[in-house]
Length: 231
Length: 93
Image (tube, rainbow over all chains, first blue to last red; front, side, top):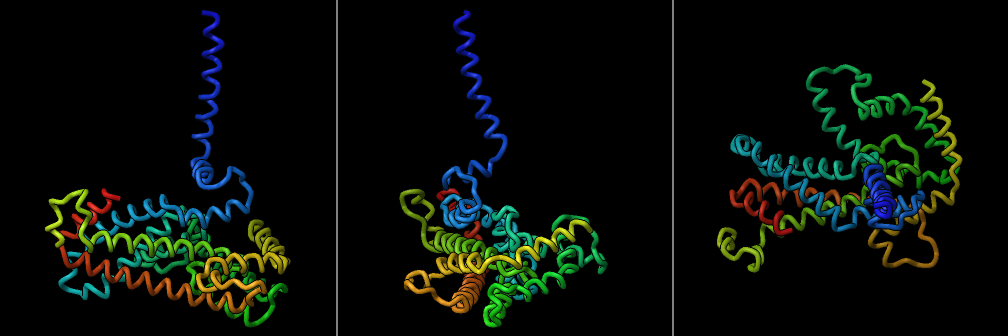
């Protein structure tokens, strides 16, 4: 009996440590799966690209997208007769896809938060046309960004590094293309761009996969009885 | 208010960001661009070139996403079986 108790103590110790690690950071475990467990800044930057290239992330995004598209379809059916379904429908699908992509980014990037707050902003604009103080954190970043814009614009112009007008002009154009980066400093815009490009590439891969899975007939190995529905 | 002041200090601190750091970021961006990644010469491609190609690439990506979403919307609007096919494709994935 006495010999068993120290063994049980030894058994409980590793379990407690594993529970603490599992309960502390799920995101860290995801990072560990993909890259080395070092938590330096460089590894986090490289994992942001690896994150968008991983098969798992594409699966997650595809699932979210399909679910959202199904809901969209149900709401689209009654209005398809009145308005032009193709032009308007395409835009709705694009917005749904962008929103799903922003959710997949888990709010860590500027462009994802900007996309999500764009959807929320429309709701606010419906009710009142007032200046919003701080109902949510996302809108605070928007309003404070507009107040701070003069100072930030000055810092963008005053950047001694890369003061070339051609580079500055191109960065400004670039910042307009990436959502949420219009009034950001140069390094922020560049960083957001790298993540945004990787995310969009994944979005395109996922949407192409969904299209090809739906339009082409499914493989006969899985369900041969249903091929006649699509064929 | 103090948050804003500290933010402005941070931004003025980032204005002292070194050219090397910016070059690093632009290099990383260059790795993402397909046309500049394959034909990677030993000498650096100019930053303006990288940025210009980035803008064009992002516009291309936007156009592709728009095109794909148009096709998806047509698909969704047309057939009823598309919904069943979507569910099935989700399961087989």
